[in-house]
Length: 111
Length: 114
Image (cartoon, rainbow over all chains, first blue to last red; front, side, top):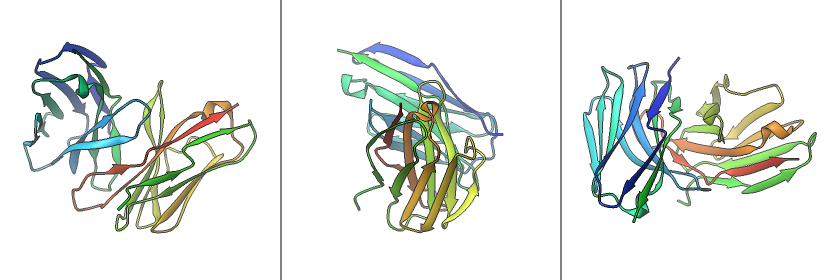
């Protein structure tokens, strides 16, 4: 059974810092890994998708890496801003399309 | 496309009543997911469909929960009878299975059972 874990559960940093969020999964037979953002009271917004054959994806200040063999992914946020404050979730998709989520990391960026 | 559309956005109902949540996936998507989110348990996958067929309903908590997808553009999640512990935010998501594209989520239905 696939299990996804995110560390830390919460993170508070001053504005301008670079930071790393971690995601690990137990079954390396994944189709892809996705990072989502969720603002309070809102739905989830997809940030990045990394296919199983890829090592990383970049979008603006965000960079996600994937090491499938070790079951790990990281989301790197450069030069953090207060607007980055949200909960970040990672999810892995198996070959049947099943999408399993971690518990999320709640990020607060202080001005 | 307007994205994944869920209705209602908020539902307050009394214990024992039937509740029906609705979802319209993005046109052309062939996978649909129902999730439940609570503070204690996070996002739990309840059931998902590929090409309108239920593939895995192992996350459905009890027989009180049922889901249908009569066609590619509509799905329902029904709770009958509802209980206070069913209170949560229910999300619907859709994706294009097999094409390695992102899943898109609706805004959710916040259910409160009193």
